[in-house]
Image 1: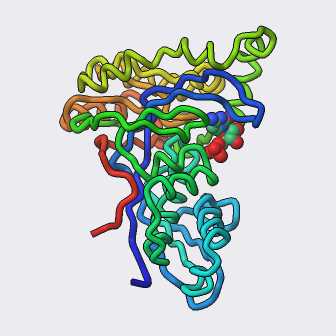
Image 2 (image 1 turned 135 degrees about the horizontal axis):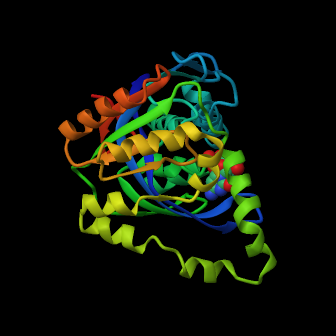
Length: 314
Ligand code: C5P
């Protein structure tokens, strides 16, 4: 086949704890990541010339090397030069549904789709762990996006342990259209405000790892206890993002007033998600929040958790 159409799902963070800073500038994390139904479509096509071309129907998505999808294709061309020479370049056409700069890993998921798609286009036959190893070179969340489902992520976020599937939870997402949080800013601010004491004292990373608080969330996932999962949602980055972005706090409060299982900012934000037990409840919450925050810039979506990672569209 000379073309593939792939589905590239977004993710939310049910849990994000920052354990410490690292010499490479990243942060040591413990996260619980969850794929959701909101997704982009990535159409990949082999070209007769040796160029990589990105197109997107969303005006804010760059079409150059700053696009993670472009970087993923470039990485594949460098790693597999013979296949690149044999099959030619690729056109990557992105149909965007996932909001941009939102904390939902839209760009990471698109890059994951390009890696999976080029593996198919070029008949490379890579294993899941080989795909994830390549994905980690593009970004911390990209390996998770390949596999999807529910997973515990450690290290930079690239070390994954699968968790049991959560089949019946519904998600309401809210994001202000013109609001975006720059992820490096969120982590740097957290580092300045909360990690300087770690640097000063001799507390080792190993000792800090032993004190992580993710255990109850992981147990709630094993028990498929939606109410408990809702209560245990956690994101350390809220400590720096909420004071700077009062709209995010307001949205969180509106979700709480609507009686959801739990609400939290996803990743570095500014998207806020809320968990609901049924789709009907999620739709009611969406309506209630729309009526309580009368702002035309607020976008709201209802979706569900999914067990899907990147997959070929049928
Ligand atoms: O890995 P990725 O390129 O997606 O990360 C984007 C930015 O988020 C990094 O440049 C870094 O500033 C921050 N980050 C971090 N620690 C992590 C993951 C991301 O500091 N574990």
